Image 1 (cartoon, rainbow, N blue to C red):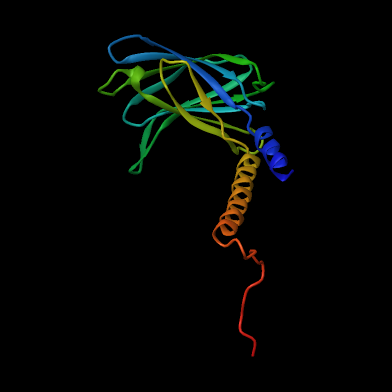
Image 2 (cartoon, rainbow, N blue to C red):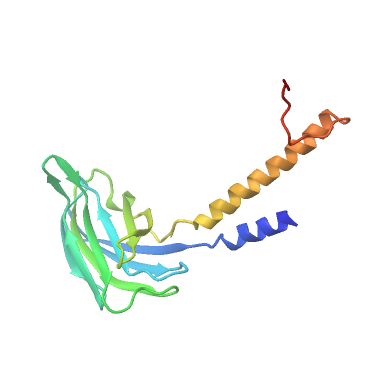
Length: 197
């Protein structure tokens, strides 16, 4: 009965949370590109804050070309601040309504210079979603520019708790089974043996 309970808890906590990120990259000149982002929310909750990072040494001269309606977007270029190399970013914050589950965010477009040796569409780009009230990161990952990719959001903590409990229960059960197979005339005891004075 406990096994069924744990399996039910495990399966119910495994929701397939993901953001579907599609980028279309257009070459504007020798080094300058434009990336148009389309983000589909396939998670259980709303997304009201999103940051897309532009790696230091690969991207430069970031500028916002367009932003989604009712979203405040701030773009900061990659910089070397007192010897610390900081990635650039585009920070998008929902002003009116967050990106609800099942909705798509269109209209985010960033222009940048590409400094890398390889083709721009082979580069990986990091992202984070966050809660606008607490600024707590709700998911993070990376995706390849120029491809439509499903990016997994973090699993629930309940999933890991249920998984560890299930593993512990199975290993305890197997220990009893192996003990009875090796020592058929003895029953495993929960008490420890000691010397009485």
